[in-house]
Image (cartoon, rainbow, N blue to C red; front, side, top):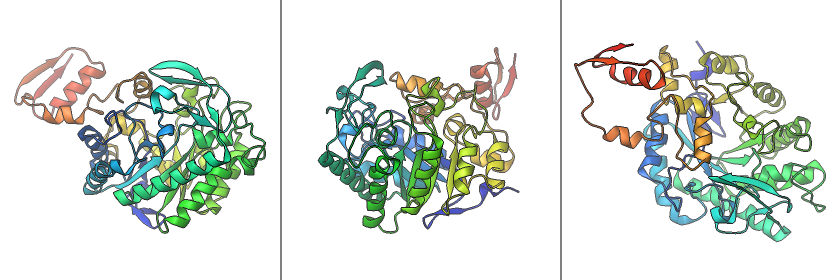
Length: 411
């Protein structure tokens, strides 16, 4: 018995279990940001696999905030028909649907977003999107801050119109709202810089306006509580922001950590195999003890025993499984049935190749982000005696896919 598979609500929306799929950029949208059949098939597979809440990838509330090519769009009404198709597919598969509203700020380039990048302060950012380049964004005026704040609220309204059950406000990982919180990247001398309350002002203003203008519509507040470099946001401040967000109306706090400037590398925000399982769990537990809304934990929680223990011990209310659901979209259904899952290696091939321009993928799951291709495949052998020579990831994956309808020997 485990609480991991029991329902729990976020802001009045009941989730069928405690497993959340967090936002991960896929590059499955088209060049303009429209939903494609591949987008739907990818997220739908995770919903059919039993995931309780599927958070589709980061979408910017305005064009200037786009951080990748083929990023999902929500900054204009023209994206609504595709988003409605996506939500309907997730609901039909039994999952609740969320979308992450995130703005790149200074972590983009004009060749990506089509406009000069903006940020709290005009300090250099190294931006890697297929190629690497250092850019200096424009410092936002008060009027520009208000325009961006308004854009976030309007994007949340589009999300509600599309049928999403909630939205996630992205205040993490070195993007715009995280940049405002970060002393290294926010050197302003007005009411948006300096003291922590000033640096948190834009994030909390957006949250309050969303709650005021969309009553009853849940907002998850995703926060990097620690930037992992000396002049970044420290946990003592991140912890305070989490408490302020809960008081300002957040319906859940999603506790993450890390930043593009993290030391020794930016990989800390997507912890590779060198980092222990549940690496951010202590942060989530500390926040949970201080707030009265649900807390979502993330960070190498794909081991079923670790995920169940995180919820059963009360350290978190939900667990977010990103790479684990890339490796095995049926993770929830398998664990609930006592069937072994295909485990994520935390090799970060998924992230690294995506940053290099490829769609997201997975070393141990060849179907990830290629669901439409595999669905169209015909002529799979049945009733055959098959010898697979080589027991690496490719050989074992192939043998596993065919074992139910063939006699397979692995050498």
